[in-house]
Image (tube, rainbow, N blue to C red; front, side, top):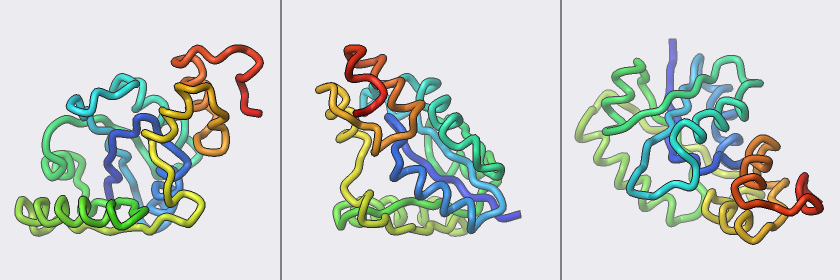
Length: 167
């Protein structure tokens, strides 16, 4: 069984994240979406809210499960029996950070492989931070996130009724 993890803070999960997860699900027998606590990032959504949004967003993928974790990624990979980490890459800045993380994880566990999936152009500059910022200004985020996430952000940012549901 080829099991991989796709880790992230997912605050919130976006269409770009879902693209990576869906493509990983085609390559692996099982994919565990690993929602990190990331308390240092001061997430907008709680860990359980982020995990639930990820579950709802991936429920159409039969070989994908969602779990939360704290601590080292390599420890979580051992816990779930994953042999690979699959990450998405957008711009060159992602590469620098992910290159460092991959090197560190390799030092901690030489058996844990890291694979990268390149973002398609339509998601190249999409990030959770951009979605949160647009949401905080009551922008139309419907093209960037699944409906369940759009609804959660509209609720969190108190969208007026006339702006709910996208435009």
